[in-house]
Length: 198
Image (cartoon, rainbow, N blue to C red; front, side):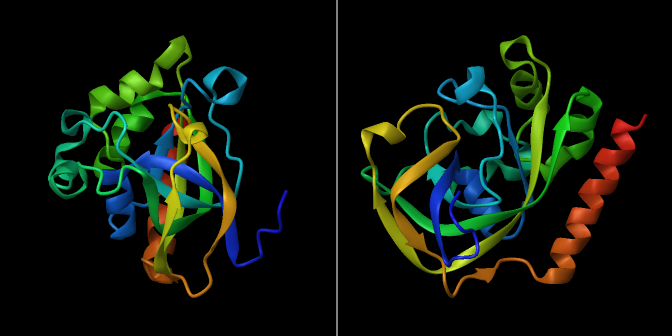
Protein backbone atom coordinates (compact mmCIF):
# COMPACT_ATOMS: atom_id res chain seq x y z
CA UNK A 1 0.00 0.00 0.00
CA UNK A 2 1.23 3.48 -0.83
CA UNK A 3 2.12 5.93 1.91
CA UNK A 4 -1.15 7.77 2.57
CA UNK A 5 0.73 10.63 4.24
CA UNK A 6 2.08 11.83 0.90
CA UNK A 7 0.22 14.79 -0.66
CA UNK A 8 -1.00 12.71 -3.60
CA UNK A 9 -3.63 10.08 -4.24
CA UNK A 10 -3.76 7.25 -6.77
CA UNK A 11 -7.21 5.75 -6.22
CA UNK A 12 -10.66 7.22 -6.78
CA UNK A 13 -14.17 6.23 -5.80
CA UNK A 14 -16.76 6.50 -8.55
CA UNK A 15 -19.92 8.16 -7.27
CA UNK A 16 -22.90 9.77 -8.97
CA UNK A 17 -22.05 13.34 -9.93
CA UNK A 18 -25.08 14.69 -8.09
CA UNK A 19 -23.84 12.99 -4.90
CA UNK A 20 -20.33 14.36 -5.44
CA UNK A 21 -21.85 17.81 -5.84
CA UNK A 22 -23.66 17.54 -2.49
CA UNK A 23 -20.56 16.16 -0.78
CA UNK A 24 -18.47 18.99 -2.26
CA UNK A 25 -20.92 21.58 -0.97
CA UNK A 26 -20.61 20.16 2.54
CA UNK A 27 -24.28 19.18 2.51
CA UNK A 28 -23.72 15.39 2.62
CA UNK A 29 -21.35 13.59 4.96
CA UNK A 30 -21.72 9.95 3.94
CA UNK A 31 -21.97 7.63 0.97
CA UNK A 32 -23.74 4.29 0.77
CA UNK A 33 -22.19 1.39 -1.10
CA UNK A 34 -22.89 -2.24 -1.95
CA UNK A 35 -20.53 -3.01 -4.81
CA UNK A 36 -20.88 -3.13 -8.58
CA UNK A 37 -20.80 -6.07 -10.94
CA UNK A 38 -17.10 -5.52 -11.60
CA UNK A 39 -16.13 -5.51 -7.93
CA UNK A 40 -13.89 -8.33 -6.70
CA UNK A 41 -15.32 -11.05 -4.46
CA UNK A 42 -18.64 -11.31 -6.23
CA UNK A 43 -19.59 -7.66 -6.24
CA UNK A 44 -18.84 -6.89 -2.59
CA UNK A 45 -17.72 -3.40 -1.66
CA UNK A 46 -14.68 -3.16 0.57
CA UNK A 47 -12.94 -0.04 1.82
CA UNK A 48 -9.60 -0.16 0.01
CA UNK A 49 -8.21 3.22 0.99
CA UNK A 50 -8.73 5.57 3.97
CA UNK A 51 -8.37 8.54 1.59
CA UNK A 52 -9.49 8.64 -2.03
CA UNK A 53 -10.39 10.97 -4.88
CA UNK A 54 -14.04 11.58 -5.72
CA UNK A 55 -14.70 10.63 -9.34
CA UNK A 56 -18.04 12.01 -10.55
CA UNK A 57 -19.81 9.49 -12.74
CA UNK A 58 -22.93 9.89 -14.85
CA UNK A 59 -23.63 6.20 -15.41
CA UNK A 60 -27.15 5.23 -14.29
CA UNK A 61 -27.90 8.67 -12.82
CA UNK A 62 -31.66 8.99 -12.44
CA UNK A 63 -33.43 11.79 -10.55
CA UNK A 64 -36.31 9.45 -9.66
CA UNK A 65 -33.91 7.38 -7.55
CA UNK A 66 -32.83 10.41 -5.49
CA UNK A 67 -34.38 11.48 -2.20
CA UNK A 68 -36.60 14.53 -2.94
CA UNK A 69 -34.27 16.66 -0.82
CA UNK A 70 -31.45 16.07 -3.32
CA UNK A 71 -33.39 15.88 -6.59
CA UNK A 72 -32.97 19.57 -7.43
CA UNK A 73 -29.22 19.08 -7.66
CA UNK A 74 -29.72 16.87 -10.68
CA UNK A 75 -30.38 19.95 -12.80
CA UNK A 76 -26.76 21.06 -12.39
CA UNK A 77 -25.08 17.63 -12.18
CA UNK A 78 -27.16 15.52 -14.54
CA UNK A 79 -25.03 15.85 -17.67
CA UNK A 80 -21.41 15.00 -18.23
CA UNK A 81 -19.49 18.19 -19.13
CA UNK A 82 -16.46 16.20 -20.32
CA UNK A 83 -17.19 12.61 -21.35
CA UNK A 84 -13.54 12.02 -22.17
CA UNK A 85 -12.21 12.56 -18.66
CA UNK A 86 -12.83 12.65 -14.96
CA UNK A 87 -12.69 16.22 -13.72
CA UNK A 88 -11.48 15.80 -10.14
CA UNK A 89 -11.94 18.63 -7.68
CA UNK A 90 -12.36 16.86 -4.33
CA UNK A 91 -11.10 13.98 -2.25
CA UNK A 92 -12.45 12.29 0.84
CA UNK A 93 -11.12 10.93 4.11
CA UNK A 94 -13.02 8.15 5.87
CA UNK A 95 -14.22 8.85 9.39
CA UNK A 96 -16.16 5.63 10.01
CA UNK A 97 -17.76 2.69 8.21
CA UNK A 98 -20.86 0.77 9.28
CA UNK A 99 -22.17 -2.44 7.72
CA UNK A 100 -25.93 -2.06 8.02
CA UNK A 101 -27.95 -5.27 8.01
CA UNK A 102 -31.31 -3.93 9.22
CA UNK A 103 -33.62 -1.99 6.87
CA UNK A 104 -34.91 0.26 9.65
CA UNK A 105 -31.39 1.63 10.11
CA UNK A 106 -31.36 2.83 6.53
CA UNK A 107 -34.86 4.26 6.82
CA UNK A 108 -33.75 6.30 9.83
CA UNK A 109 -30.99 7.98 7.80
CA UNK A 110 -33.53 9.92 5.71
CA UNK A 111 -31.92 12.78 3.73
CA UNK A 112 -28.52 12.09 5.33
CA UNK A 113 -28.07 9.82 2.28
CA UNK A 114 -28.97 10.76 -1.30
CA UNK A 115 -31.33 7.90 -2.18
CA UNK A 116 -35.07 7.34 -1.92
CA UNK A 117 -36.25 4.63 0.47
CA UNK A 118 -37.06 2.46 -2.54
CA UNK A 119 -33.59 2.87 -3.99
CA UNK A 120 -31.96 2.12 -0.65
CA UNK A 121 -33.97 -1.09 -0.33
CA UNK A 122 -33.15 -2.09 -3.90
CA UNK A 123 -29.46 -1.70 -3.15
CA UNK A 124 -29.86 -3.31 0.27
CA UNK A 125 -31.37 -6.46 -1.28
CA UNK A 126 -29.06 -6.53 -4.30
CA UNK A 127 -28.05 -10.11 -5.20
CA UNK A 128 -30.13 -11.47 -2.34
CA UNK A 129 -27.56 -10.44 0.25
CA UNK A 130 -29.20 -7.87 2.58
CA UNK A 131 -26.68 -5.28 3.72
CA UNK A 132 -25.23 -1.89 2.82
CA UNK A 133 -22.07 -0.06 3.83
CA UNK A 134 -22.56 3.47 5.16
CA UNK A 135 -19.29 5.39 4.93
CA UNK A 136 -18.85 8.71 6.74
CA UNK A 137 -16.42 10.93 4.83
CA UNK A 138 -14.83 14.32 5.36
CA UNK A 139 -14.45 15.95 1.96
CA UNK A 140 -11.63 18.27 0.92
CA UNK A 141 -11.52 20.74 -1.96
CA UNK A 142 -8.35 20.61 -4.03
CA UNK A 143 -6.37 23.73 -4.83
CA UNK A 144 -7.26 23.35 -8.52
CA UNK A 145 -9.29 20.86 -10.60
CA UNK A 146 -7.40 18.02 -12.27
CA UNK A 147 -8.50 16.43 -15.54
CA UNK A 148 -7.73 12.71 -15.79
CA UNK A 149 -8.32 11.22 -19.26
CA UNK A 150 -10.85 8.42 -19.24
CA UNK A 151 -9.53 4.94 -20.04
CA UNK A 152 -11.46 1.80 -21.08
CA UNK A 153 -10.50 0.02 -17.86
CA UNK A 154 -12.38 2.66 -15.86
CA UNK A 155 -15.71 1.64 -17.41
CA UNK A 156 -18.48 -0.35 -15.78
CA UNK A 157 -20.10 -0.65 -12.39
CA UNK A 158 -17.07 -0.54 -10.17
CA UNK A 159 -16.41 1.46 -7.04
CA UNK A 160 -12.64 1.82 -7.05
CA UNK A 161 -10.59 3.15 -9.94
CA UNK A 162 -6.78 2.95 -9.66
CA UNK A 163 -5.43 5.83 -11.73
CA UNK A 164 -2.28 5.51 -13.77
CA UNK A 165 -0.79 8.73 -12.44
CA UNK A 166 -0.88 10.34 -8.98
CA UNK A 167 -3.08 13.35 -8.34
CA UNK A 168 -1.54 16.01 -6.10
CA UNK A 169 -3.73 17.14 -3.20
CA UNK A 170 -1.38 19.63 -1.50
CA UNK A 171 -3.16 22.85 -0.62
CA UNK A 172 -6.58 21.19 -0.19
CA UNK A 173 -9.07 22.57 2.32
CA UNK A 174 -11.95 20.76 4.06
CA UNK A 175 -15.43 21.74 2.90
CA UNK A 176 -16.72 21.53 6.50
CA UNK A 177 -15.02 23.02 9.53
CA UNK A 178 -13.92 20.74 12.36
CA UNK A 179 -16.91 21.37 14.69
CA UNK A 180 -19.42 20.70 11.89
CA UNK A 181 -17.66 17.51 10.82
CA UNK A 182 -17.37 16.26 14.42
CA UNK A 183 -21.05 16.95 15.09
CA UNK A 184 -22.18 15.12 11.96
CA UNK A 185 -19.96 12.15 12.67
CA UNK A 186 -21.27 11.96 16.23
CA UNK A 187 -24.85 12.18 14.95
CA UNK A 188 -24.32 9.31 12.50
CA UNK A 189 -22.50 7.23 15.09
CA UNK A 190 -25.27 7.71 17.65
CA UNK A 191 -28.00 6.99 15.14
CA UNK A 192 -26.45 3.86 13.69
CA UNK A 193 -25.24 2.48 17.01
CA UNK A 194 -28.64 3.03 18.62
CA UNK A 195 -30.51 1.46 15.70
CA UNK A 196 -28.23 -1.56 15.49
CA UNK A 197 -28.51 -2.27 19.21
CA UNK A 198 -32.32 -2.57 19.13
